[in-house]
Image 1 (cartoon, rainbow, N blue to C red):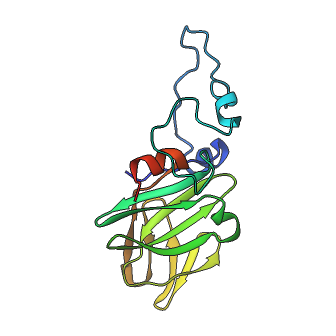
Image 2 (image 1 turned 120 degrees about the vertical axis):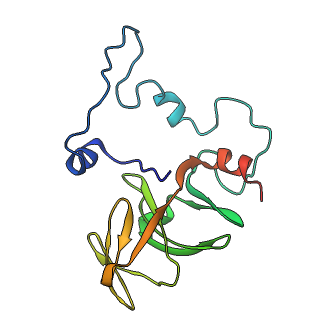
Amino acid sequence: MPMVQQSWSRWRQAHPDTRVLSVETGYSRNYAPDGAYRAYFAAPEPAFPVAWRDRSRAAKAVVFGMEAPGGAKAWPLALFAATPLVQDRVGLQDVVLIGAASPPGVRAYDATGHRFSRAGGDTLVAEDGVWQITEAALLGPQGLSLPRVPGHLAYWFAWAAFHPE
């Protein structure tokens, strides 16, 4: 399933009827943002041994990774600070990635047969016209739709361990 990590305020604005589980669980765990894992997130190395390591990136560099028929690929999240729109191919699938390094988040869409450029806001432009970016799909002219495809943020050491190629 496609997923996204974003700020609570942005989520709440898009989904005002969202309900959240209570942090009053009866246990003395710190459920504040980053409370339980603050030290781990700040440390440069994993908190446990990792059998296979690809040292081409820092172990805990954040990447956006996805799998598609015929392959898997990951992009450093830092790339999206300078290039918020990336057209690429993963295995047999053409994709367009729309992302930001801060707050971190990337959305991947099927891009079969289209080359996009960013028009600003929630719109893209292709040869056939203007496309609207939504959570579920890119909506184009004449009722065309390109679905969102699964991908997720991961630490490099974890992605590389599952995808050594």
